[in-house]
Image (cartoon, rainbow, N blue to C red; front, side):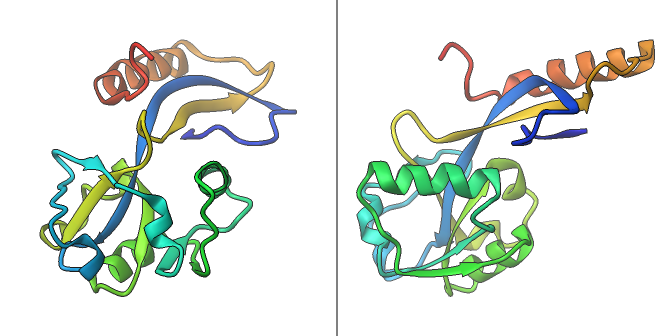
Amino acid sequence: CVMQIPGDLTELTYELVMQERIFLVAHRDHPLLQGLGSALDSPVPFPDLRLLEHERLVMLPADWRLSRLLYNTFSAHNVEPQNILITTNNTTAINLAAEQMAFAFLQESGISRTPYLDRLACFTVGDPPLACPMAVVYKKKGFLSPAARAFIDQTKEFYARFDQGRGA
């Protein structure tokens, strides 16, 4: 399975595939973004996360890896968001951002397929840009067939071009 690295690796093992960038996404016409053009294909860093403290933020549940990464980032930047809406669905998050109802933090792969890309501003977060590890995860001490090994190797090769952790 290609996914974020699970928190419990008792019965699982993984091979790192890539570091996927995390973007702050919002409607490009949001008043807070005036003069800050930033598109998915050429993103710029969001200037200051403290600007978001009183904005509505759409986040995944707090115990999910991406949210834990973001809460740690908020803590490092002394940011205490006051208006958080929790969803388990990335499509809901991006739809709310596209309708200018919230800011959302999403992985890059979840943004590129949206039909609303022309409405969105996409910013990186932090320097270096915040990224989340993606991995091939499989059962520990299990047998990997030659086909499974080939799948893992091809997956790593394919995603290497998107890896934001290269040379880091």
